Amino acid sequence: MFFDSHAHLDDKRFDSDRDALIAQIHENGVDFVMNVGADIDSSTRAVTLAEQHDCIYAAVGVHPHDADSMTEDKLDMLRKWASHKKVKAIGEIGLDFYYDNSDRRAQRYWFERQMELAHEVGLPVIIHDRDAHEDCMAILKQKRVDMCGGVMHCYSGSAEMAKQVLKLGMYISVAGPVTFKNAAKLPEIVRMVPAERLLIETDCPYLSPEPHRGERNHSGHVRYVAQKVAEIRGMTVEEVAEMTKRNAMTLFNIQA
Image: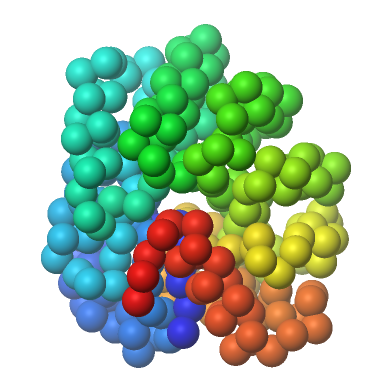
């Protein structure tokens, strides 16, 4: 049974059939899902979903796209949610210099503040990093991610950067792009990451894997990510499922 370590089941694209999809999660081979907030509203929805379903846990945080609208009052809301028994991480947080939807100074500032919050509340972080590798790594080192733990979600960096991430004690998570024909770097990274540091995810409704590329993604599709990881590492799908589920439960401090 799989652990989808990063999903957005609260997304509006699931509004028409969310309950049915969640009801089928176990039939699709998924034990647990980490539903990840991206702003205050989605963090609220993530907590609500986690309260309603035993198989769902929540992360709360503000994505770099929304850094311009972030405030200390909103940080206080995240702080309050962090004490909830189903909230297991601060995220997703980080930097995005590809879209630049928020001022880069604001992105850096609120990334740092949310890193400080993670230390304060004793939770790991879920990191978004797009075209901001150098700045992202600098903040992770400065803010001592090695002391709170975390994962680079939907990893898109180089093998050299992956080595730095691993030195910081972090996990690396791969999603649908590992199944794409043009996934040049990812197979090498999947091979090099130690067994105890690898996670799998869907990032649904985004990044649906082959053979469903271009469709709306959902947590049941995490099996295709696992199948590709198994192929690359010379393992069975069952071994990948067990390994990555154990890793996710360790990172997020989930007892089952």
